[in-house]
Image (tube, rainbow, N blue to C red):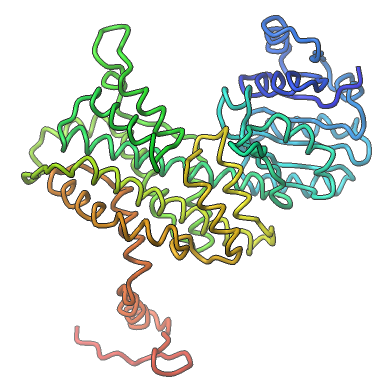
Length: 469
């Protein structure tokens, strides 16, 4: 069999991607380090375009040159192990692709390691979960630009298709660019999910709406400018009944959210690059504090929190919607600021309009206004900040009063909304001439002689401060 591609790793995602490729008429060789998963896959999903192999030499020989290998194993040492198992059997210009959630710096290291040996390497961000992998994910390939054409036909065929028919896949940039874009995608995902959770808390705990009513609200929102994958599934989740003890399933789920690290990686990268991603970081911290479940139950009954009465008016639900839309814009703005910074630092030359366009289908952060982000960067590829684009500028002006009102109500009610609050602080910070940094710089010069600049003349200055203690 002269396979078009080999998939290594027969877990859920690898299996689904292999089936996706096979369903698109590609001949696929499959392999797993432990043969039991390979056997299970072949038994459950027999396919005329799929052939199983049980050793690396046979797998390699089964693929037509230039050979293409798509690795779907757990990020970390397992990826390195697979690469090292392949290298002795490869020939010049064979291509290794890592489709897992690898840290972009690991991908940069592997790119250098593999290319120096005469082979080609791609780190491919994959978004969409199990369903996306099977029926069409968003794909973010980063690696050797000259070697993209041999893999382009496979990747673009299996990718999700946007409403205009374009595949949600494009070449991102060199070395770790693809995995970097996926990492920040996940950071935006964290922020988006936290904002939706906060809107739910406001509607339930401040507005007093039932789960059925909130589901109907989200369903209505999904028909308008907030239309997105996450809004849609939230409407479904809130009306799902518990098939064990009755009531609603969401109310029976432990109030403690997990995380796999990609959101945290985004925040760390932002700190390293000097970019404000406060909304994403607040989402990570919200998950952190959710893990202190027992302590929260204890302190909730301690009387420490002293909320104030809140007046709910007829505009409350609409104000929450407007707040969510404004905060969502701010979160995506932070993500694309981070992309712009990374593109300059790593010389990736990211096409931010194209990046937004591949999120329009097949992925978790699929949202209606991604078309507006693409349009903004098509109009001005050098755009510094999305909020300076006419569309987003007008939307923030149109919705920020609601965001201010909702944050105030939440603070009065004692409902934690860190993502909404950080969105407002980010917008205010960008639009404020003096943010107190002059005093901070004076303090730094006072205790550490760190110097400062002046607004009325050029140069670097240090002052001998009068000490009165």
